[in-house]
Amino acid sequence: MVQVRQAAHLKLIFDMKILFVAEVFYPENFLINDLATELAARGHQVEVMTRQPSYPEGVVFPGYQNDAYSKEVWNGITIHRFKTIEGYKTSKVKKIANYFHYVSAGKQVIQKIVDGVDVIFIYQTGPLTLALPAVFARKKYAIPTLIWTFDIWPDAVYMFGFPKVFPLTTFLRYILRKVYRHVDRILVSSQQFGPTITEHTGVKEVDYVPNWLIAGEQVESSLRLPKDKINFTFTGNVSKAQNLENVIRGFVEAHLPNAVLNIVGNGSTLEAHQKLAKELKAENVLFHGRLPYNEMADVLQQSDVLILPLVSKAGIDKTEPLKIQNYLQAGKPIFGVINGAGRAIIEEYHLGQCAHPDRIDEIAQGFAYMANMTSEQVAQVAVQAEKLMADRFNRKKVIDRIEAIIRETARVKVPV
Image (tube, rainbow, N blue to C red; front, top):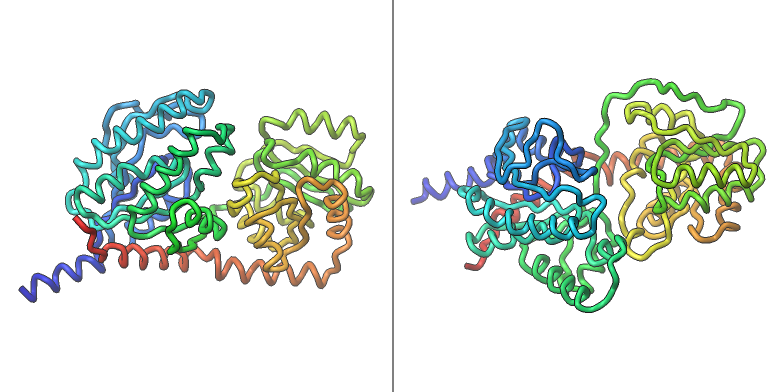
């Protein structure tokens, strides 16, 4: 009997079978790809249950069939896929239908693949309902389960325009309690998610586990910023959520003839912002369009100040912007036109200056301040950014911690 127990113990520590439950996975580009690949490389048996790849357009990727079930192996990881409801990008009805289909299909598939699983890991981007198949399997098969939350409910639901009214509020509260009270460990990607979970569920033990930066091969960009100007640069999706209208108005109000505002990216509000800049006669607001991701590091290095904007809206500002890590990697001062989690990081680590997203005068003052930073201040920001990337957002350290948490969770005895 002793030998059997020792063998089981060694299996638990050195060769766990981990089942990820996720809405997205390769070839969709999310952090889970890197995490799962690394855990597999460390000797764990990793499997993933997800839908057919379709994000972000809501259409199944070329080369894939929207089958009820399919199985493939990528990087040594077994991927179990089931059908997705296409068209969810443009239709709220199809979006909701897709949520419920994930639950029903997920429950059917997970029962066929849980044999030998030591721990279930819910990677929650998008709807919290995706956790329900895992919660179901935990109860039925007594498998320890943890969740890593990237989108906090109910805030994320209201952010998409759903009304904060009964019976939706009651349903959301039910889902929150159903999930967070019936998992064995809760991880959150933002420190500001914890209080929301506690408020709605009473659960107090929450672990903060941040994103990390996946550094790919970088090349010199075809875009060359003007060397004789102070370059303020925004990179990324150009949409209402980025609050670029107020950023542009604040920049114009700052009256900085020796500076330019570079907007590098594309999106739904690009034309409106170009029109606004023309109306304001802001010739020093430059729109460069979208560039390949592997050119972005060079663009950031050419810049003097990096802009991190976000609308002032309950819920959305609790998320730690993933973009901040790209900015930290560049080691440049950050001007945060932002509240919430992003602002907290900038202020705590003295990475630059912040302004309220709705205060044009405050934004203008922020631009003026950043334009006049001394070389000593700029150098200090670089030191702080390097420290933050080496500590809080260090890939190896974060994955080491996740692996340790998975091991601890796998030892939990789930009540039958």
